[in-house]
Amino acid sequence: MGSDTVRVAINARLVSFDDSYRNAGISRFIYTLLEGLAALDSGQEYIVFMHPKEADRATDSPLARARHLRLMRTAIWGADGPVRRIAWEQLALPGALRTLGIDVFHAPANVLPARLPCPSVVTVHDLAFMR
Image 1 (tube, rainbow, N blue to C red):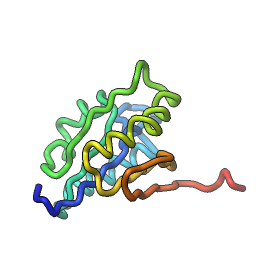
Image 2: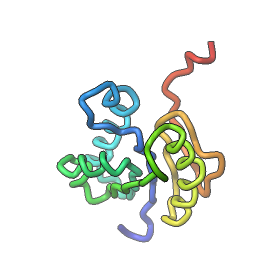
Image 3: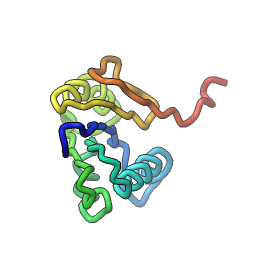
Image 4: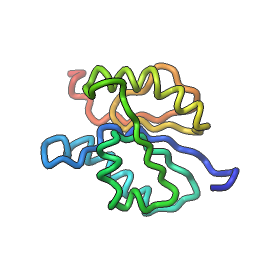
C-alpha cells in the first residue's frame, strides 16, 4: 500500500460462521460489508479485527484473498464472552488503533470505545430500545 493509503480499521469481532443464530443480524451485516469491501479495491487498506476462530474460518473466503484487507486475529484476555469483549473494545482496541496508525475506525455494532486516537464511524442498527 502506498504512503497516501488511508488505513481503515473495522471491528468485526461479532462475525460468526456458525450454523446458528450467531450467523445472522449484525454478524451477517458485517460479513456482507467486508465482502463488498473485498470486491472493491478503492485504494484504502482495511484492518479487520476478528475473533481468531472466525479469522481462521475466513481463510477460504473472499476476505482472505483481497490484498487490501488484513484480517487481524484478536485474542481477548481469557475466555470469550460479552464482558471480556467489551473490556477489549474499551481498553485494548484504542491502543491497537494507535499502534497500527489507523486513520479511520468503523464500529459496525452500535458502540464506540470511549477514547479513540482517530476519527470514527459507528453503525446503529436499531433504536427501538428508546421507545
